[in-house]
Length: 280
Ligand code: C2E
Ligand code: CA
Ligand code: CA
Ligand code: CA
Image 1 (cartoon, protein in one colour):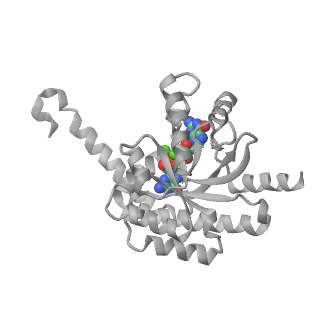
Image 2 (tube, protein in one colour):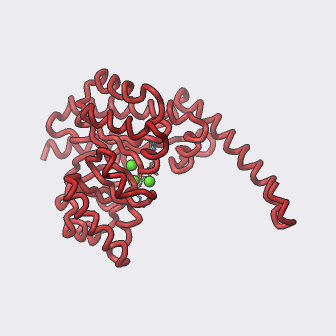
């Protein structure tokens, strides 16, 4: 249909067809992924500055496809959002992460990660009964409500009329709310007026530029004033160097996350790390 403008686009349709076909095939595979045990979670520490002590663990989803190997969530999450399967995938993530949080809580008590966070998509927030399901999962697994953090993006919160209500209800239940990828959406500051937020996760695109780009440095620094004024915690995402960590701490950031501290790791690796900390 793009051919209307001239020959330039005649190649376009077959490629779009192929892409749509690949999309449909991968979507069908994803429908089987849970039953075939191909999904798993990695956990990336969120650390407290300046020492780098883990204060939380963010659950990050992985899919080991039988033919294509590891597929990035940046590919399959948007796909799952398009075909609606994210609701079931998200339910699996919620259950798995809560079971893991409960296991750490039982084994390590005070020394367990203080928070476990999960990423919530727009479709989940719009799903009737989502909040009740979260509450039930917490009750069933015995995870303290204050220990579960839900990470939502500005785009997700603003995607439907009921999404922000769901976030408010989760917050009222006692869960922690983190606004993810902050600064990359469109509404940014005004959202902080309406939406209950405990943690602001400043996107790695700003953090990545703090040592080289003046504009990014200014934004990262001024967001601290906003979080202090609103009494919310600031988390810097994508911290990759000691110099960045130093600047963030100097700017007043209390929490950080990134390859400089730790890559996303398996639950077993986190457990080994907790064992080591307990024996020190
Ligand atoms: P996100 O929530 O913003 O997660 C942070 C991403 O940055 C992760 O990519 C993480 O591995 C990566 N990262 C962490 N530290 C660094 C660093 O120092 N440098 C760089 N360059 N990257 C870093 P990942 O695991 O590939 O996840 C990508 C996105 O997929 C996530 O972005 C999130 O939006 C989505 N996602 C992952 N798991 C889930 C899930 O269970 N549910 C939903 N709805 N979305 C998920
Ligand atoms: Ca996140
Ligand atoms: Ca993020
Ligand atoms: Ca992201």
